[in-house]
Image (tube, rainbow, N blue to C red; front, top):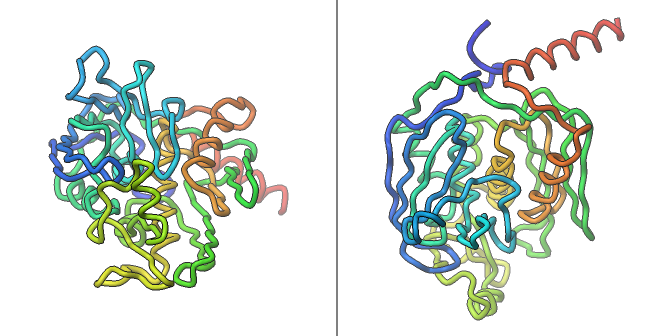
Length: 315
């Protein structure tokens, strides 16, 4: 049997970065300059953020679903001493979709640099550096039974499926956005070719209010799409006709990466966002009958047996 899962190119074994890389930029919401270094890590480390601007006894923040403390406009994780890192979703989407299971992320500010507002700068670097195979097998979280969460006009769910998949739809009053949907597997090829360059976005009429509330301090036309009077204000226009839903897809990949393993199942989102994404993860991870922990290899065997059984019953 080939060393990859369901023809996705995803190895059964954990990987880390072949080398470290450093990014310098600004936080989208704090506006602070950030120097961030992403380094290889040992197997089973997962994604570990380290704030080098605080005392080492308080510095570490594991990137896991139960560490999420704020989901307003971005995803923020914090440790039990109140040290936080926000806007983690784009970097985590890049690492996860490029098959990097373990990495230590060291930064000197409370926010990941926004770069150009997408995951492409991170993915480009990871692609250039490459990854290293480790000896431990990859961890999977297999969705056994459907779980769902909902709020007024918004919903998200995870249901059984043989490969990681996202089906997402958005609906905005803005003429520029309107109704958009996207349904794709979560693979490195899909992320690079279809999703990575999709940027975060906002509305001009909300900018001043956001800044008064302490958000969007570092936002600009170089790191976000700005919509004003039903027009895109960025000189270069959109990178994709449906860039807005593609960015929501990207955000979802990053938020689901906080599970701590590859979710083998299909995510369905209707006007969902960071808040519902985290509520859904909490529902999945705390409802034992909804999921099983196993290796990626075992998840593939499970689905092969299940599909063969279904085919036999139909025959």
